[in-house]
Length: 222
Ligand SMILES: CCCCCCCCCCCCCC(=O)O
Image (cartoon, rainbow, N blue to C red):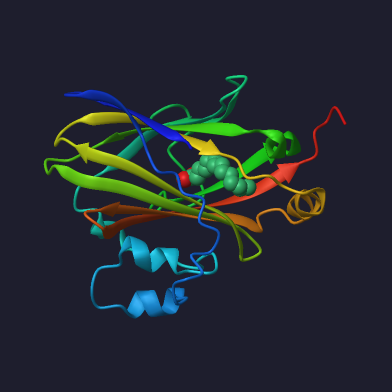
């Protein structure tokens, strides 16, 4: 079980969230990215849980973010040692959030982690974000991690309600899956073939889609 810490300008709360570990939602009929792109009604949480592979493109246009949710600070840490593994903040040096990779939208990031990453038990991902002048009801993220189109783990974080015109701070606690040595060897050997799709929903309607790839470097000390 993982948890989410959330605070905002107008309220502050600590809550637990159902970070599910759905393996493949195998009771549901699979659906493809192409089918979802053609869907005429809004894409829902259940829809993305039916995906069996990492996406190639994006399932939203940037202007689907009518709530003007803007991520301004992101930090990943090892919960055991508190060591910061990655941090980026809008406006600091050349660290415009992800814009060097995808200048038009800032919704893609390429991570490099040491291979000791695989031994971590829990990772905290802190995100600070601002909300425009509309309240955000039932803000939720489904994040699916794959290696070579094999689902490793699917996470489900419920942020709840975010008042309008607030800056919010949330830390998602990821319970790491267990990796076997064959899998980690391959993930190191094939950089950027480990991928994630982060789908953000308001009121069960997809409003943002972010992606990441992961490369793992052998630790220098080994
Ligand atoms: C190798 C992947 C297995 C699952 C690991 C989960 C760790 C998540 C770290 C944070 C991911 C941030 C994704 C993002 O940029 O939105």
